[in-house]
Length: 99
Image (cartoon, rainbow, N blue to C red; front, top):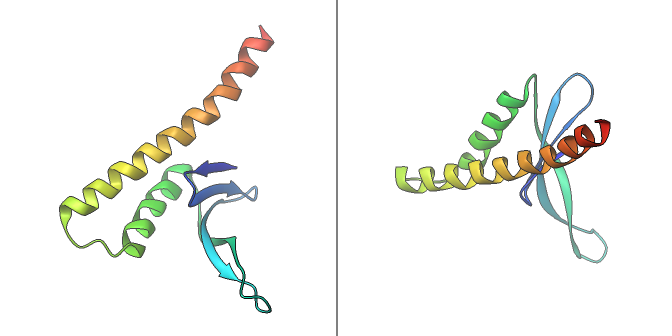
């Protein structure tokens, strides 16, 4: 699983890359809020899943002007880069241990 910031994550079911977004829900009986993960889409590659995430995020934030959209894309790219860096650390440590 690849966690991207607090709001998105990617996981696989063996056939697809699944994009999920965190969604606030409320318990029926107590109305207490809790977070759950909502599937936003199924993708055949990591690249298409990340592009899909950016598209969905921009649409859901109802961004209107180019400057705001570019700023949001920059933020998402930073989150994606951080998530990828976090994956590299365990892989690099594993490679070092193998030597």
